[in-house]
Length: 228
Image 1 (cartoon, rainbow, N blue to C red):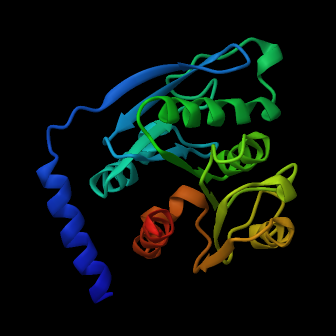
Image 2: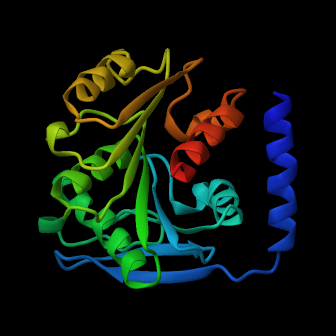
């Protein structure tokens, strides 16, 4: 706990030093013909895409985006098509399978605008889209992947790069299934390097940041994204 308090103090100092830094609002085209709205934080060479869950928008990532930016990351939080500030696409472009294109559009934007590496943090259904995007990406496009309480992905064996799985021990889906069970099934199929972190409690995905596990969750993400 003392280590974490020290980290918080350091992070607060960095954030204070960056107060007034402009947050850039973007509209990014996807490869299948729609657009997504996004907010850009920071200016580092290491990029991070934040993909929200089903009951969230890009705005909900703001506290985490600011911490990541303060630690030297160029951060892009976006709204999936039809969520938040992103327009609702035509019916033909509304399938869950198309959501991976939103993630890839965000990843490629960062690559084209100064990021040498890009990682993705995907929460809940955003984690599924992030996993599918990784499976569909070119080698090296997505360096690291944080899957926060995500559901089953389509092709976990094809997920590339380093992987960090995180879930609350007692988090359950609408049917009462413990998400840990689903995630373990995916975890067994993905290739190394990989790591699984189980937090205490029943909060789901981004809601974990609001619990007593929030500090540890942010620490685990920062440690994973910062490691050489």
